Image (cartoon, rainbow, N blue to C red; front, side, top):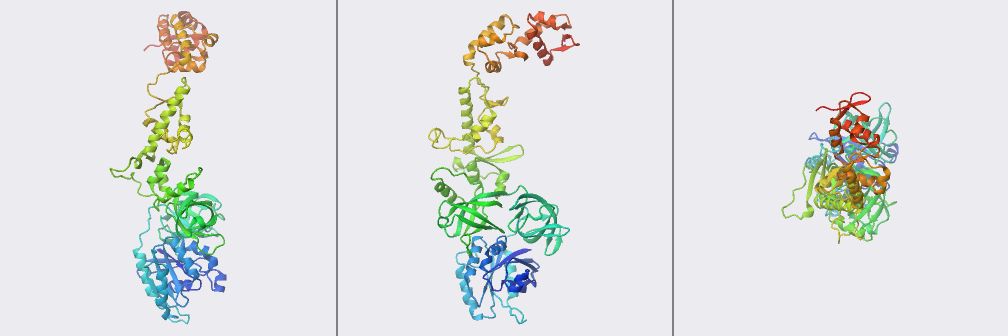
Amino acid sequence: MYVVATAGHVDHGKSTLVHALTGMQTDRLAEEQRRGLTIDLGFSWTTLPSGRDLAFVDVPGHERFLGNMLAGVGPAPVVLFVVAADKGWQAQSTDHRDAVAALGLSRAVFAITRADRAPDQVTEVAAAIRAEFAGTPLAEAPIVPVGIPGDGTAPTGTSDLLTTLNTVLADAPAPRTDTRVRLWVDRAFTVKGSGTVATGTLTAGELAKGDALTVVSESGIQDTSVRGLHSQNAAADRVAPYARVAVNLRDGVAGAIGRGDALVTPDAWCLVDQIDVRRTMGQPFADGPQELNVHIGTAAVTARVRPFDDDHARLTLERRLPLELGDRFVLRAPGSRSVFAGATVLDLEPPELGRRGAGRARAAALAALPVSGSPLADVRRRGAMRVTDLQRFGHTSLAAVPQLAPDAPHEERLLEVRIGETRWWIHGPALTAWVQRLRRAVIEQRKHDPLSPGLPHGAARDALIRAVAKPGTAADTATDPSADAPAMPDASLLPLVAHHAKLESAGGVLREPGATIDLGPAEKGVAALERGLRTQPFAAPEADDLARLKLGAKELATAERAGRLVRLSDGVILLPQAPALAMQRLAALPQPFTTSQARQALDTTRRVAIPLLELLDAKGWTRRVDGTLREVARR
């Protein structure tokens, strides 16, 4: 199936033409039938002589219903633009032309209706159509005159029109079926016994019974699944694009979905409420209002506008929408019945703007971006990105990092790494900057606290993620080449950065390999303790002795990491060789032996003997025979 939306001024015969082509009445509302005026979207379908199925979305032409018109044309890949021979080009023809241009539609057929009433006007109207669309992708779209008399006489030109539509559709690129789904909802209703049904135009991806979906609506984000599918009033197990489709959703979304909402593949889309955009036609942003209505797909939302220049701006949407880079949309001023401008999405996660002149700098950065965005630019700005996030942005061809020319500058280099099951693309200079920043943080930690075992992982993450130097501070780019690098985007990258920084990780800290531990002022006390223990190896110092030597818990822990001392439970401090020396004396005792016998052999107190024996038990060097006896373990 292919889907075609109508467009054109009110009362130029759009609905009459669709009825003649399909035999189906698209004005379904009682008020529409009473007034003979299309108010809301209508739907019909037919089969072309070629066997190709064709569905129409008939839109209202009155200026008061431009929002409804945009909801119909927004998701459609092809437009049937209608101009009446006896009326000629009129005001709403211009508005619909602007809407079609803003949406970037590149395939159309022009129908000159009522050619039977004003045959001498057909050539003039055709020339007007060419003039109005000059310079657009539709400048050379085919024009077909048709006549649909109201007296029962057979219509003229409809066969030619269907043949022309068939040719245009045959030349259209095939839709992708192997991609994610985004179905903009144009109608939603409840069927007794079945639940919520949402209809829309499926332009990419496939839908099948049982598929999981996410509802993105004004009331929030909900998970659901497909209970059933209909297309052309017939049940279907699977629907492929392009198609008009009715999706029966599982329970839980009744009353929470309507026109402007979307059904999307779960976890496959960026759901955003702030975007940076480029104007594609219409009035400059700098001259526009501070608020505009944004029409994309079937959605219409209000957005605050921050202009950067005439062609680029930041839009803050009133609610989140599922968008991708390159999406085209229409902008209207509040209360206006005409198109203000057309625009395209350039960035889905725009950076914060704080410093003076940031808007001008942002305009220059956006001006350098291609229409559909650049994976290199996205990764470069963020330092690193998951490939799945690049896919959510709408980037394709991500099987491998782009192959750059041999003479490409160093700053264009991308690396691909896997962390667990996650593929990352990393900007080479950003990785270099993170390595420099991390090594500097480790060195500064050692200088600031010589007794520290190293830089804790949490502090390392802060150094790379939060504590980012900004230009203008003491660590700006004049003295620190890494100051302008982006923050590391995710803590899972820390081991990679530490590896490239040639740092070792142990005990939750990072340190330089082979770094010697400087005891600093504690050296004198530790040396005195060592001298005493060499003379009496099991005469562990008392708390008063340690206090006199100015050895607290931090100093003792550092000496232990340096291999100078060993700490047992209950605050017992010995030399590292004490356990081996104890084994020599215990092995000389009659086996098994009591704790008292061990204490006497070691020439020490119970305060020292008990934790020392427990250590030897834990090492497997000694073992208990019963509640009072131990023996040296045989090897």
